Amino acid sequence: MNRFRIFTNGLLKENPVLVLATGLCPLLAVSVTAINALCMGIATALVLAFSSTTISILRRLTPEQLRLPVSVVVISTFTTIVDLVMSAYFPVLHRALGIFVPLIAVNCIIMNRTEVFAYRNKVLDSMLDGLGMGLGFLFIILIIGSLREISGNGTFFSSSQFIGYPAIIMVLPPGAFIALGFLMGLAQWFRNRQVTDRHE
Amino acid sequence: MNELNLFSIFISGMIINNIVLIWFIGLCSFLRVSVSLEASTGMGIAIIFVTTISSAVSWIVYNYLLKPYNLEFLKIIVFVLFIALFIQLVAMFIKKNIPGLLKSSGNYFTLITANCVMLAVAFLQAEYRFNFIQSLVFSLGISCGFALAVILFVSIRERLELAPVPKALKGYPLSFFIAALMSLAFMGFRGLFGL
Image (cartoon, rainbow over all chains, first blue to last red; front, side):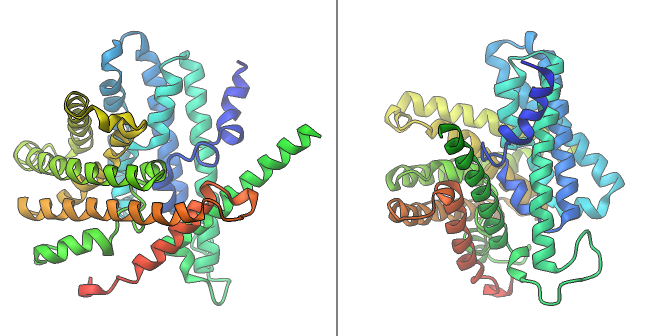
């Protein structure tokens, strides 16, 4: 497969959120403001890219039975690094993201990509796949974070308030479900249209 | 949170801070197990059982292994490893003794992804500095909340199976709207006990 296609695969065609419906827990919980969403997206993408690369390097050395423990250790090591770096340099943000930084270690996207892709492919390909999938996640979480912040708080990246009466429900938990529901509905609508176009 | 009594810890974990609908943890397995009412009831009971035991294990590991040696920074790796190990053991036990439980496909997978819930419980009880009994009650509450949410969700979705919804909203989008309404309902419990 062409390298460029591996990279862009995660962005749209096999987007981990919209198509595979994985990694929903951090996506919904953290996307209250755009800045939180951006940081969570970057952290997840970093852990995903590094773990995919490392696991792909180790794939010939790991015996079949030890695959799960090895990948668990690799992923949680990178999560620990991200967690500690964040708490050292961005303490306010670290407190805002709270328990969801350590939970990157069991993020379904990362588990899925390492199992499905990194164990079967070359190092460079796995790195590109990890980066693409990570960016696909970053893209969606940033959209949802911006949507929720604008409609629920009337601000964007903590700017001054420009909507007088925001719909507070959008920054509360139900708003996350509603935003993601509409976004996935939109994605499905596009996909249905493409399919019918091809048939005609 | 230390001065709370056990009952309010239980109710707060189960309803006020419902792990799926308010915290979004374990959402992936939540959406995948909710196929039929019977399957998800079985799953809910399994998750209650497994989470409570794993919470006890992780409490012991945290307070007797990590804390005395100042190794708290390793807690992510240690918790994830212990929980993965524990799940493997449970899966082996089930495969040997209750083979029928694993026959409905996907159960094993959901046990694995449920480690999201178990890990969250392990972190939260370390963060709140619960004692042993408190953390047991807390994890029981959290996992009962998970089971309750799954069972309610499945019963609603089964009724909507044949409803005429727009084609683009079938499947996941519809599930999210149901979850949004349920989450709205659960938010009504905020303010109970003044939490």
